[in-house]
Image (cartoon, helix red, strand yellow):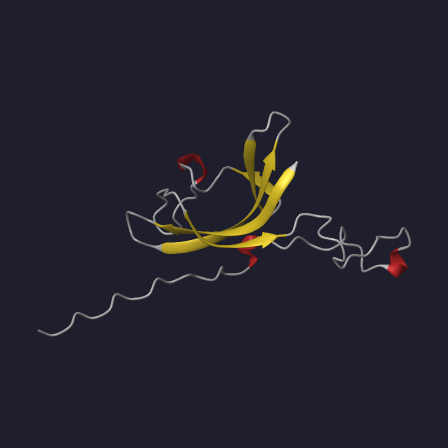
Length: 129
């Protein structure tokens, strides 16, 4: 059973050349029949290893070295059906009564535009003595 859905912005800093970049991942947290908790990451609709583990670390775009990411921001996505009174609309079989067919549009890829960066604030200047 899915227990939580979210978009997680993962920030990477290369320990070799110090380049910083971020990547958004879709993540599902779920509980199996044994009560064990699992997480499943996707990027552009394809399953990927956790970006928080060495095997899921993407290569640095500048030097190619791999570095584990850190969570920079996240946006929870409500798990359906939601609380009573949540706005929702039943999808009818007549397409004219619903929006354009969602299966016919091109995919919205995470790499199609530059991901926003989360710069860390500069250290405050030291007080003069």
